[in-house]
Amino acid sequence: MNTHKSDLYTISPEMPAMFDGVKLAAVATVLYIIVRCLNLKSPTAPPELTYQDTALNRFLLKSCSQLTKEYVPPLLWGKSGHLQTALYGKLGRVSSPHPCGIRKYLPMQDGATATFDLFEPLKDHQTGDDITMVICPGIGNHSEKHYIRTFVDYAQKDGYRCAVLNHLGALPNIELTSPRMFTYGCTWEFAAMVGYIKRTYLQTQLVVVGFSLGGNIVCKFLGENRVNQERVLCCVSVCQGYSALRAQETFLQWDQFRRFYNFLMADNMKKIILSHRHSLFGDGLLKKVDADLNRLYIATSLMQIDDNIMRKLHGHSSLKEYYEKESCVHYIHNVDVPLLLVNSADDPLVHDSLLAIPRTLAAKKPNVIFALTLHGGHLGFFEGDVLFPQPLTWMDKVIVGFANTMCQWEKQKPPCQSGLLTGSSCIEAKA
Image (cartoon, rainbow, N blue to C red):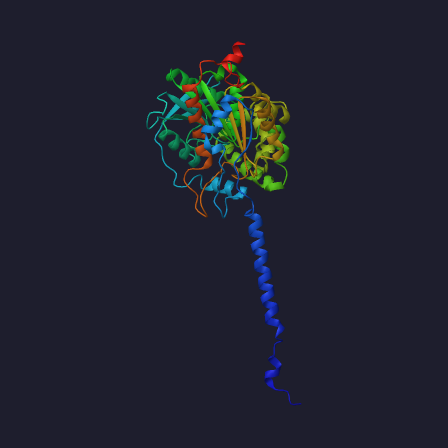
């Protein structure tokens, strides 16, 4: 048999072509996954706005350009709500500044001690008036968070005094002085901060700002009592969910990995509660409120923590009752000051079904504008060219832009007040 040794290693000419085809298919698959995951094919657009045609709203949309121009996130990753949310959570903000403020301590009637940080303006406001932004951060957040520091620095440079609530129990170096910590909708600490500002600065007017959970708190605060709306120019709420009861059902779903985010937030809440275990559960308080710490240790969702710990600390008989009383959805319709509600369509924490609440409210009430962006995630709203985001976000700019416009309106509004929200003229009102 005369077989040449080289014949044993002969490779079919079709083999290299097949290998190249497999490589191309693999590359194409990876690119497809990247395009889908990063949502690269999604267009950019201005926010979708829901509002009534009134003189004030026309003035707001004409003067606050951020609401009518397209929001352009960073090209490579900015169209992914998950990456926007993750970067906000980890980075907070790019090149975060360090504004200098003074920490204030306010004793509460139940023995708790509310704290907030006060930052004076770095220049006169453009209207010449004294304006204070009263700010409520997101869940478990405080004035030292990067996104809060960035926003405060920007607002200070535009002539605003800023007062930032530190959620009860959120600051790691501040001990609780009573067996109570922050909840989704308890407004007591925010009310104490607002009261201090009103008493201390008799001529100041207020711009109310709430981020995420803070948006629920500020809208509930304003709607609880019309007295709370005195000296308030306007309110801006960003990325809140409006109804804790409706949101809890969506937080158990894996759609948009919401169940995973629920686990992460529950883990953070667990750490905050356990860091204050002696203040919350010492001296027999654990048995008094019938709380079970063993269940807290193994909890994997906010609902489990709320049912076993939080609702009992605040005297609610059921989880449903706790969520109902904590949600601004039952109070927000009482808010009559100009109200801007901002959400993102790709926010992985706020289910699309919850957005019917602000959309319906804006369609019914002349003082409400609901702005829904295509992109932005949860408190992300980063802007940039291709890869690197800008230090200031679209969210920062739209809040200050809206506040500036409202201050201008107050300065130059017509003497006839009856047409402020209805858009009717003085002649029509007299008739």
